Each structure stands twice: as structure tokens, then as C-alpha cells.
Length: 257
Image (cartoon, rainbow, N blue to C red):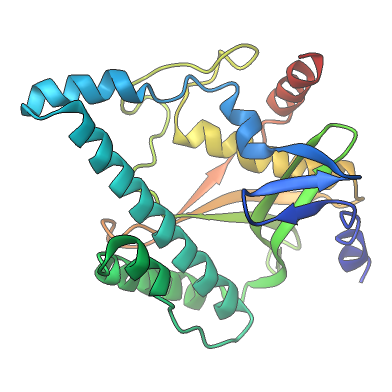
């Protein structure tokens, strides 16, 4: 019961879905993903589009268009999985609404992909429904003093470890670990971290944990990414380190600026 009460400590943070924005006392807060983006090298779209255009003998604009198309696909796929997952844990029947997909693309290019990632999620649910007790979904956390807020997918109670793990669902095509793919490093004071999906997601979930623990008496357990991608044979659970020192350094640098 005390855990549930503690989760109500963020009622002063207002989340507005349009624009994915957060407010406290009529002041807009910086989202966790935006904060992390300030320390990432980012993706140099123009440079790489021109490079790929020469490689495939097409225009740079056509490459950028294709990337935008794939990004839109990823967004709609992620939305579908999140809604399905939220309803499944609540014991609700969820019927996929494809109207926005059809409106955006003119047809449904995601039917097969969504079917596969739903099947992967059902496997995860079957494997863990007797272990994980759902506490909170789509939980908004933030700190007006720090000017930072965000939202993660699930907080559970683990009946085996008696801990409170934090989970986030991802559907992206790639999940580069340290030493994989094109290696680059984040900006100071995080320049010791490789700028890849693993560390960016570790920073993301670590910041959620930091905000949650800072304003409650809760001690969060494992930080876990559930990766559901149609190109994978099955779902993958990726455990992330708690980068508390890096989170404090990142927020400290942000507050100075």
C-alpha cells in the first residue's frame, strides 16, 4: 500500500500527448529523451543521405524520403505494441485500430510486423505473468526543481526477488551494444560512453529511476528493455546498468546552461 501511495507523488507533473510535452506550474519541462539528445552526437542525416545516394545512384531526397517512411512505420508500430501491452496486463481485450495507419500510408504496410511483435509480447507475458505484478503503466515522473520529466512503460513488483523493476518496450530494428556498429562517443560530460542504443536507453531508464527515487522513498530494482522486433526470432530482455553518476553529471551540465 505504501508503494502505491508513493507513486502518487508526481501529480504536479502534467503530460500533454500532443507534442509529448511536460509541464509543472505552467512551466514547460525538458523531456528525458530531449535531455539525453543534447549529449548525443545525433545522426547527420544530410551527410549520410548524400553518401548513400552516391552509393546507390539515387537522389539524396529519395534517401531522406525512404528514411522518413521507415521512421513513420517505426512510430506506428511502437504505438500499436504499447497499446496492446498496456491492455494485456490489465486483462482487457484490445482491437487494433488501423485508421491512422491507413490515413498516413493509404494502406497497411505494418500488418505482418504488428502480428509478429504481438506474438512475441504474448510469449513474454506468458513467461512472466506469474512473476511480475503490474504496479503502474505509462508512468509520468519528473522534478520541477530539476526541470526534467519523462514517462516509462511499466513498473512491476517481482514476486521472486521482492524488488520493483522498471521496464520499457522498444520495437526498433537495431539495438547496438558497446563495440557494435559505427562507434562514436557522446558529448562531455558523457564522453566516456559510446553513443549507441544501449547507452542511450541506459541513460533514459536511469534518469527515470533517478527521478522516481528522488521524489519517493522507493528503491527501484532492475532496469530492463523489452525488445520486440519482427526480424528477431523471439523477444529479448536487455538488462541495463544504473548510470546514476552519469545522470547527475548530465542534469548538472544542463542546469548550468
